[in-house]
Amino acid sequence: MDWFHTEQSCLDYLEKLRWPSEFVCPKCGVISTPVKTSRNRLICLSCKHQTSVTAGTIFDKTRTPLKVWLAAAWYITNQKQGVSALGLQRVLGLGSYQTAWTMLHRFRRAMIRPGRDFLCGTVEVDETYIAIGDKTHATQAKGRKSHTAKTLVVIAVEMLEPKGFGRIRLRCIPDDSERQVIPFVQDVIQVGATVHTDGSAAYRKLKDVGYTHQRSVMLGSDTPAHVSMPGVHRVAALIHRWLLGTHQGAVQPDKLDYYLDEFVFRFNRRTSASRGMLFYRLLEQAVVTTPVTYQHVVNTSKMASAASRS
Image 1 (cartoon, rainbow, N blue to C red):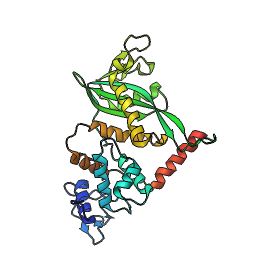
Image 2 (cartoon, rainbow, N blue to C red; image 1 turned 30 degrees about the vertical axis):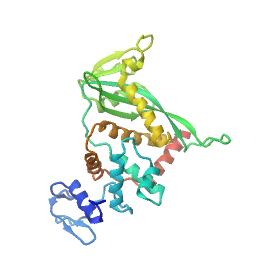
Image 3 (cartoon, rainbow, N blue to C red; image 1 turned 90 degrees about the horizontal axis):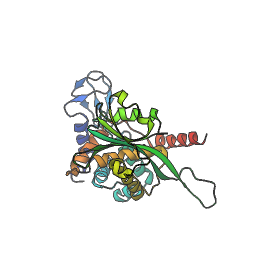
Image 4 (cartoon, helix red, strand yellow; image 1 turned 90 degrees about the vertical axis):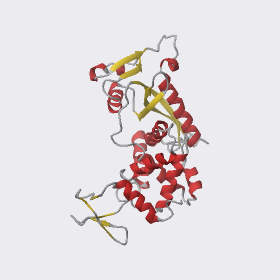
């Protein structure tokens, strides 16, 4: 709050993040020094297009002051175990739960950096079911307001030598078939890496697409699964604990991917000694992430709910 006590100081900071060197017109792509108006508009000298620092970012058309947004970013990155919308509302003194909820969902969309590096070395890959309390699909049973939904999630964990875990990647998938798990591996793991899986036939073509495949058949083995593949089992347990502890397990299935993005963001930066750097990275990604409105998030949920019932 000392650094960003005015809207102008917030705008100046975000402008440096969005255009570190010089202003680039979002319409014509010309690099130049824009004309600044009294209403914080930036006018391109080449095409006369008018824009603003926040246009096309997660802050686009927000009615919430930017200093509140930046305070939210600081609070989110300083909480190691995650943040709930209710907790954010209380800390920031927001009058609306809807505002806090939307802010969190916008920040979650900025937590995954486009073009991020592939996992490499030895990487464990497996699937797990995430049980979540789905309040949007209320059952008709008397006295019952929600029910538990299970969503399949595929996990990739970078294994370090001699021990320990590196970075992770997560994704919700409709089933554990080859057409789901092979594309996931190709999207997140460097070709040539060693991919360690269980005995599932879904992974049998890994060698054909350029990976070294290490299989551990669990059926009939004397070695427990959590010993053979400690990485994926440890991460799966942490995800369950985090969802229950931070969000009480009440996560809508169609939004689980965004919550998993937040978990990945926190897990991969768990050893960072600088909270300020996490704040910087989150805002750096926020100014290049397209906005999403509250209505868009709600309507997406309704469409997903209708599709699941049809």
